[in-house]
Length: 436
Figure (cartoon, rainbow, N blue to C red):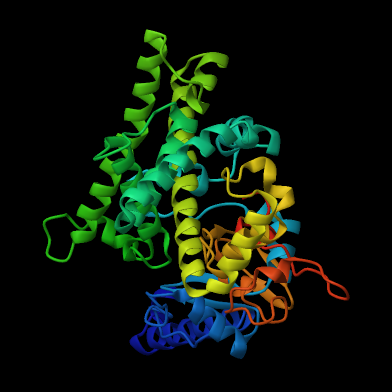
């Protein structure tokens, strides 16, 4: 009887009915998601995702679709958060289900899933965070590195005086010297090529290039994983291999250096040496230590280099700000010595300049994508499990409702005056949200 019902006309009718149900389900799911550009069948918004300065595009979209919007990439929902209030509600207050990272093929092949920023939320992540907290987890701990930073800044200023046209290289050498000494007790070559500094630069560039949404289509088209590297158009595989080799070298070589220095009794105090001295040795421990060291260097070097670049740009474009900051230094410090960390509280305008640097050009304009571990509902929209979330930090730091004249560099916005409260401290936004 059942076989008799499977006529060609019945099969067509069943398939048609299934198609209608799937289409209705798709439309229903699409309506439940936050609004955004209309997706195309199958590929979704693949051609809508901007490849350059996406934070500005997402900010423009928010004028039409609101502070919470979404796109899809081959069925993968990508939810963009454009307001501080929404980011705090989801990423801070509901952090238990918003603190995971995307499980991307590219990140796994490169090895980025071993690093704190892209690691799945769990015990290993908490262990790496614990290691970091013992090194830079409080203001008192960070202040211990003040003399080291002061010494390297003095060397940096001398290099600028001797060769001002090499500013970009001087900035990278300054930051690399500070962070590698803190992380591994390694002293960067003050002049010329330095192996560890080159590896640090390569790995931070690799991380930045690979974490933008849509960087590798293989993350959204799983069948691409089986394409061999010799096929034309598979250059992305070679890129993954190159990123992976850079990361392996930068993970192992500085760790080996510190261990060799400890064995010879010449090691300088550092994050790595301190952990090797105070923790029982094991394969798991050394693996965690190695990748935490990489994350410490990568996170510290890339962001700090960007901020110092921004400082020089701002001082060039806004000479009145530079003049006012210099006048404050001359008045408080004089011209017999350079400012130090101990002078910070007596230099409120200079401190405000630093705050405005973090706001004006955000070092991480889109942060690092999150991944939802459970379904959720917000403001009437359905946010499905597995969705990727991107906080548009740039938009939050350029919201005219929070920061009037947001495109202008105005340090005084963070200084109280009669009848006027300082604007929101950008540190509460620029460095991310919640458990991440």
